[in-house]
Image 1 (cartoon, rainbow, N blue to C red):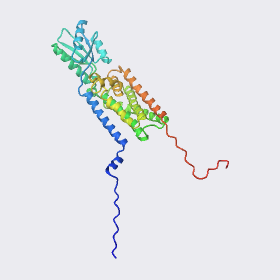
Image 2: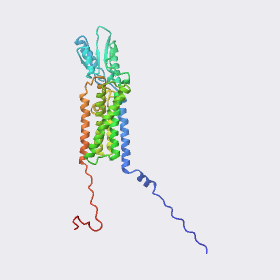
Image 3: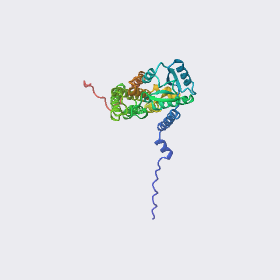
Image 4: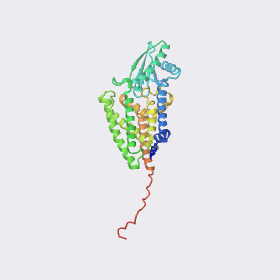
Length: 364
């Protein structure tokens, strides 16, 4: 009798491609990917929007002449240039103009010499080489229309190791990156939102220690080691420590509000909006109105202005930037603590007893 062979075992088919895709890319992951795309496009828009066409607008410029009528006429002529590139004001003498440049009250000064066919333009490349160049080109064009030449004097030049005065800007960027990366690492390693106020205080304490170390090492690298920034080491150290803590505290606060998404929000605030508006590559008078308006109020802009003041201008005009950084730091720290305070962990339900109840201490 012939035996009928057993049928083959059924082939186990895994889930289809769509099911695999849904399992591999969750809805939350898809939302985060679209968020990354939006952040990338915002980055491109912000940087190109800020830098694609730098144009001077209302650059503070003093005018000096032997007589008041001559100075007022020269100031009026420059103020009436198309596009309002210069914001002119008359000062009494060249010494006053130099002092105002050194105090960061103005960005340049034109010294008119009626008895000569050549005038003198005072600039400060330490405020930004691109700004000094823009002032020179604007005034030189106006001088040529009057058939006059121009001699340029750099009142506050940048140091030989600080090409185009950008080292302070790059130092500030490095400090900002360290601040939000430190806060991000704390979130990734132990949860974006601290479980309670004590843990929030611990994170802020770790961030403070990191900030002090990062501020010192960044200053030493930029100053004594590379010779790029020759300003006061203690002052730059203090600025760097405050800046790193400020950006880190902002990141911790945003993480407390939005979880892991807070890291992206911090990048949006500091990198996408803050860096192109910081006045580094192009100082504020060369930026479009939006970036010119927000730059001084954000940590990268305040930090860049303060770093240049410490390095080249004896710490002049630093009150505003330091208040900005301090306000962000205090606000970020308080919001971090508040978010931790308001967070409520779910209370675990008591486990059901199995078996006979345990006798108490009296044996009852």
